[in-house]
Amino acid sequence: MALAKKQIKKVVLAYSGGLDTSAIIPWLKENYDGCEVIAFCADVGQGDEELEGVKEKALASGASECYVVDLKEEYVKEYIYPILKTGSVYEGQYLLGTSMARPIIAKAHVEIALKVGADAVCHGCTGKGNDQVRFESCFAALAPELTVIAPWREWDMVSREDLLDYLAERDIPCAASLTKIYSRDANAWHISHEGGELEDPWCEPSKEVWTMTVDPMDAPDVPEKVQLSFLEGELVSVDGNDFSDAENGAGAYDALMYLNAKGAAHGVGRIDIVENRLVGMKSRGCYETPGGTILMAAYKGLETLILDKESLKYRESVGLEFSHVIYDGRWFTPLAKAQLASAASFAEKLTGDVVVKLYKGMAQVIQRRSPNSLYSEEFATFGADDVYDQKHAEGFIRLFSLSSRITALSQKSSLKDQEK
Image (cartoon, rainbow, N blue to C red):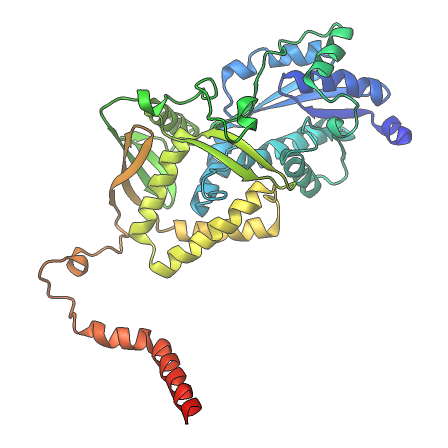
């Protein structure tokens, strides 16, 4: 191990400015023979408050440089939208907000490492979580020649107190304190909350847990309608506002921010779940995904109008499988590529408008229309029509149930033979 440490001359650290990564910078320099540490921070829409002063913090902790890379538009356009087309929801509830951001962060991390000629990349993920697998799987797919350093799997520090003491001994400033209760992760799609009272699944989340959305009980008593327009599976406008051109106007990220504001005001997108982590344990978390909840409801509402029964059934199976692919960090794999392509092929017909009603935590599709709609009022009506002969249903049912009929007749014949 000592030899390996001596070989590391330059490392790029995924840096957030929080307690863990602030301690990692000096730890790397002390334990890898004074290697140069370059900090990398991905802006995926976590907010100005979290990014404020991050470069200065990194340099004060001992980094030689800090790259802050704006990935917001690319994240929504090239990662969120393709995942939306798969309809992926992990274990029936989770809209994959944390896991869907990991591939683009890992990709940018590797790009910085290769640009500066680093020997290694480093992350602050713990040995208990999913993110260590997600990041390192991406590193392996993109730049297997880079050494991966995971301090939480190496150092002796085990608590928040240990990290604070470590920084204090070295006179390294850090805004973190022992009063922090929750572990949070935010990006343009959502914010997650873990820790504190949430570690007891019998304990109801307090009001202090939620930070992004209004309590549905306190949301407006009057519902609000939002109209979303799609072109071949891509969101292009909301409430008549064009969000199709990021370079010359507003783009995918702006659309999501608009929907986040609308949904948050009505308490939309809160879930409280116990999920199965990839590493084998269960964890309890609360998630807020206001804009994403609206977007997913609208997209699936449009699908019901356009996709035939077998196509929708298959797309749903792709969504179920892909939810595990993205949750497990397998974005840069042939399997993910194939599943994304499958979903994209169905999305080619997904053009139309959907109206979603927001009220007291709910996002309900109430209107939908499309030039590619398979819905026919002539056929579906309960009134008189000239296109459907109900007598034809008898023959269809006899053929549809033929195997059941044959099975029943066979069983009766066997019983008669046994009675003889």
